[in-house]
Image 1 (cartoon, helix red, strand yellow):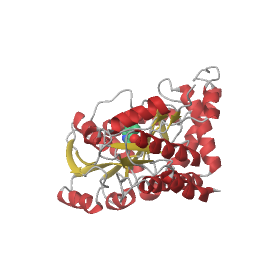
Image 2 (image 1 turned 120 degrees about the vertical axis):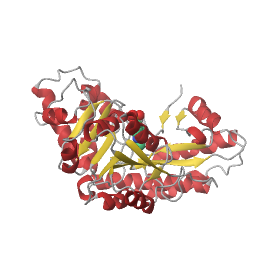
Image 3 (image 1 turned 30 degrees about the vertical axis):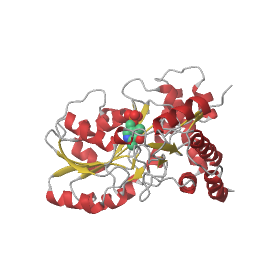
Length: 380
Ligand SMILES: *Cc1c(COP(=O)(O)O)cnc(C)c1O
């Protein structure tokens, strides 16, 4: 027997009470029973997004909501300012290009956050930018981008701020209305503690108004149609009913814990993990602007990170994420977003220490774990 631990930044572990709820016999989605669940989810999501606008629920992975943001709001030929500091920033640009937008790229070194000055300068040089596309947390590099400062640049202008909050919403505060974020997105399999398959999107009044002039064809992802259906406690097409049934429980858990406490828990686990990495003498991938969703670390140069991640998963039963593109084999990403608590980080650090030792790196056993313990003990 081998006990398994899922410590990857998506999918993330699903709480037992959510799994049990989703395992109940299927109900029909065009019923008052399901509509009540749908309505409760819609209300809860507004609190998580910190918005008075409706939060639409789409049956797709997070990228579907990213696509819908482009195809429902913008026009062919619109200029998009895209922050590309990792795989997901690059995806924003690819989606924009696929639908005929003209992309102005801001390339950011992987592991760094975008500089607010660079965004301001690009906006100044291109006064006709229709939208700024950025990640709240760039999961591939474990970086948090300065969304609040960027929102100050777009707030009272015609430019829309489009934020992929897939590993930021429910991790740290990103109040959509207060900051003036125009489009905000998240997905089910990250901080929302659900299996993959749901995406969420909300538009500001400014973004809804802009959508009136949109000329990009779309059919399944029709946000106006979804908004109309949501007002009647239903969805345009068959919803991912089991996931929405699970979502109701997730939202209740998060709101019972209290959003402030949810953010605080993520902050503590993130600080503890970073301290553990440094106590092992390893380098953080994003030392200056780390996201509280996941912590990236460079494996020692003598160790093949790809093999280490595989061995930890297959032999030790602990699943982390490795690196992509030029970081392939060079990093490990330890997740702490969603259903994670103190002792998960102890497991994470212990397994990394043991794995590194096995792969020939000179580790002081327990040094990382001790650093984690010291910080998570603040919680008790
Ligand atoms: C996971 C993730 C996505 C992509 O979501 P899918 O559900 O795989 O489509 C997009 N952006 C960020 C920041 C993510 O972490």
